[in-house]
Length: 414
Image (cartoon, rainbow, N blue to C red):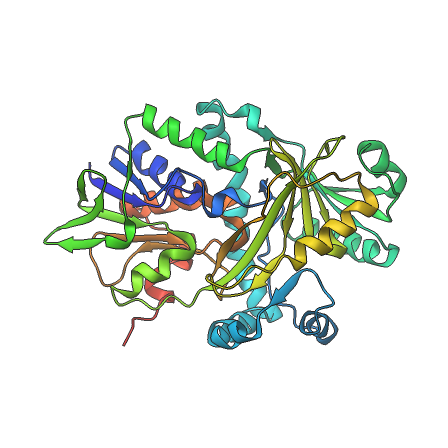
């Protein structure tokens, strides 16, 4: 049995802590605030069993032109930050070329295929069934041409990966979703995906399970991580916490910490916003309005609208344009009330240029481990990459784990 510090109490961190704990290790989970209140809090609440191919940068000139000219609500950007991230974005663009993306997707699909299976026992053990809907979600299309293209794409994913879906025309969709007040061209219903009506509460339920099994949750400053002899230490409330091993599961903050130890992490931060609105008729399933780049999900706090990506530095000013566009579009198809919060929430998705999470042992420091870079799928993949890391921690290797290895993918700083 080893003593382990897991830094970061989001979905990735608690997934890692539970997996290590299940193998008999003594785990201390460290965060600066309450569990699940950073990146894990802000997503659309989807456990995306259908997301077998990671989000690539489009390479079609018309799509790129829409991004550059601000015509698309999927992606917005701050020009100064695009230049700042240029090397990582260029690597991301190159990795998005069809041959490389297909190779990456073969690895990524193996992770996604495990996602709901790895969540299921934790949901049951944590008594969190009331937070979960196993009903899939819709991608809805306003125009027939776009729906026709989505139909072909759904069939491709079925043939290539076995992803299940069903197609609905506008009339059938309105029957299944009484909240809709306008008929659309159609929808793809991804039937195997799950959703939660409170992502933070799901993380908290997993943390309570971890504590009930003997795990320790503490308040500490991961940025103060240091190595003293054979021990890793972090400062915290009431003193320092120590262990023979430490796992960095800090999502978008991981590069800051690891730069001190000589690692250059070429991360792209994709900011996302959400806001809750009053709505009289809840949705039966989350709904992605593809034409307007937002996901609408009925949460315990109200109807959550989650945006696409904004390429911006973490300290960049707030730009609510995507939410404002999404709100106007949503009002065309739903009865949407006033915002619940005074201000929108925002956070940053930690995306690696090759679109794969970084999981495994640090190449330069014994006892240091990495589990970050999940991009849009931290909620989906936290338990899965936690299991992979725990296997590696106990000396069990696999081809899948090797594909995520830090030693192969992170250049050491000069």
